[in-house]
Each structure stands twice: as C-alpha cells, then as structure tokens.
Image (cartoon, rainbow, N blue to C red; front, side, top):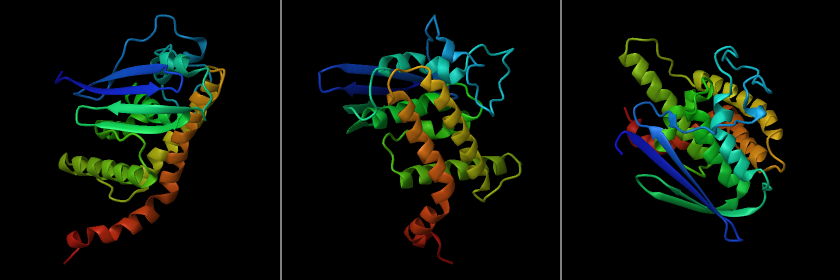
Length: 233
C-alpha cells in the first residue's frame, strides 16, 4: 500500500526452519506499525534496566517502546547462539538483498529498524536512514549514509530559517547517545534470552555506533577524491 513501507526479513536455518518478519512502516513518518503482544514480559517494562539517558516518563509510559516492539522477535531467537549460521533474505519494494551470515549478523539490521522506528526519542534521530534501509552495510556505507542524513537535516533546517551546523559535531553527539542506548538496552536483553544471539546482535550495532564517532573523518578523507569533479573552482 502507498501509505506503508514494507520490509520483509526471512531467516532460513540449516535444519529447514524458517522465520519470517514482515515489518510495516507508516510512509508519512516512518513509525513502525505493529501489534504488540497482549502479555508483554517483565523485562519490557520501562523501569526494568531503563536506559540512563531515557527521557520518557514512567508515569506516561508503562513499557519501553523498543522492548515492546521487539519482544516477539526476542522470543523467536532466545534459544539461538550468535555464531549459528543462517541464510537471510531481505525484501523491500525496490529490491532483494541476501546473505549467508551468523544469526548475530542477520538479526542486527532487523533490530536496527525496530530501534529507530519504534518510538524511542533517542533512537529516532536515525530514523531517516530507515527509508533507504541497507542491510549488511559496511562501515564505510554506514558512515556515508549517516553523514548524508546529517547534512540533509541541516539543509532542511536552513530552508526553514533555522540555524544549520555543517560540521559533524552534531552527528557525533547523536551516535554517542545511540551508543549509550545500545549498551543500556543490552542489559535489558540479557534478562530476556537464554542464549546470546539477541544480545550480540545489539553489540554489532554498538560497534558501528562507536566506529562512527571514531572513523567518520578518516573515512570522509578517503572518499574526498571521488568528489573531485564537484570540488573544482
């Protein structure tokens, strides 16, 4: 449907087991459209290992929005080890992606979508990247997309008559906050799963968040020659 963006993740295991996750996003605001389980687990409640920088009030929110939206998937993967092999297919409106990888590597991009579109005020700063979701992205690809998102936001701010900041300081601040949520949410995940696939999928995301703040300038320096035609006087 035109008012929804659909991203489908399919996991096929060596024993023939298949897990299918059909994500729907509201095309107008990229918010996740999801029916949450009726009986959410204790670990999904907002006060349970609440992120240290969470701005949500426990008076207004019974559950952590990420945990509430991710609870069903956690249940599906709670008995998997992170290093187990899986074939992952991702279908979007535009194309298919596929990769033979670990459960940890295959679960990370799915978790990334839910974390940024599920209603978390910190993680939603990365929400624009979901519109052009790139599963299994390399660090260079992630940095390029993140910088593009940041500078596009500054363009919109400028167009709206607001102050625009063209350095990467703002992007680094965002990823520092995102990294904190990743680490704190991992503590919540440890109470949710018997084995380590869910937690290590989150660790994967945290590695990329950490590397974004460390490697962005170096990566852009390496990419600068590609822009030579656009940098002429």
